[in-house]
Image (cartoon, rainbow, N blue to C red; front, side, top):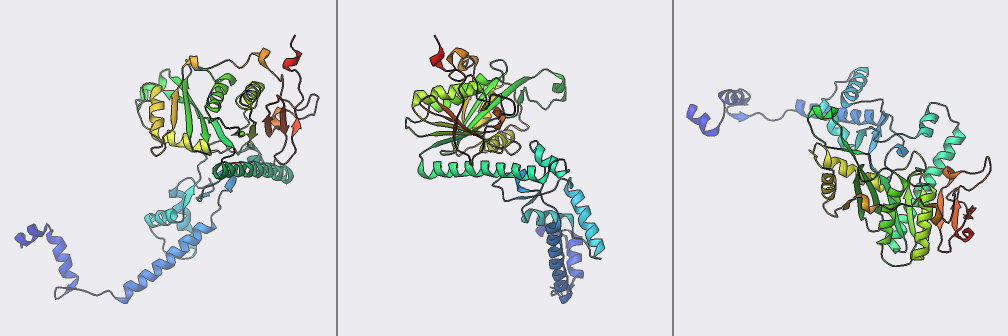
Length: 394
């Protein structure tokens, strides 16, 4: 007996169990009772799917526009709370609940997820949810959001199908700290702030990551302008329009310094450049996916030097690596010299109650030195009032 067990690597209790559950050494056949049990389990799975279908989901504008995943509302914090709700529903119908493992398996099969906001939610949407904003203002806000997204999608398709425009999205990644270590004592030490300004070419899917730390540059308009102008100057020499999509952050993207720099570049390259701003609170772009990839790559990594962020960024997308540069102070130029300005303001109005800079949705820079604007994506272009021109200089 022991020789048999040791040869097959079996325990004596296992063999005795097999013998007890067999008839004359032959395994018993599956009875109808087991088949009935399987049928009941199928009904239980159907009930579980019905339970998931009844749970409230997040509106799509809180999530990525292209995602197929559905998110449960944040009232459910984790899968433990989810399983607790499921068992309560089973008790109401006098049904035996399935295991938590089965619940998680079906949950993943249905492509569901618990909602965890990665960014601040839209103030307007949150205010409407609690009744502080009327339906009319909320519907107008959603209409502007949809218009901006649809315009971006159409421009992206045009660039990829016909190649008659260059289109970029750009944004600044959340600040990173250096050094980044697992030691708890590091929490109390002084750390260096490291930033990454990202531009994503929607036509070629090339990604440009400009890393710099606070010893080389601050978060000023000239820093972002230097990165944008550097990339646009490296484009192929073909006279096709350039479109820039971004959020409406005034110090970073919607200011007089960037507008004059883009106008000067337009005159220099003899092309049309357009700036288009997404609706506040709904500024998800392809750059966010880049930042997410970099976050995953740098997570739990020990980083001693700021330049290591650049090295890890190159490895974040193996098939088409990001184009990464770590910048020093010599790279940046000063774009705040007012003696080079063509326009002294990009505000559409000049008096009280007139449109302000934050009302701009599109800015168009023309090679003849004129800036045009739109207050809505479906409006006509208007010429921006010019408070001062180079022709005024003595």
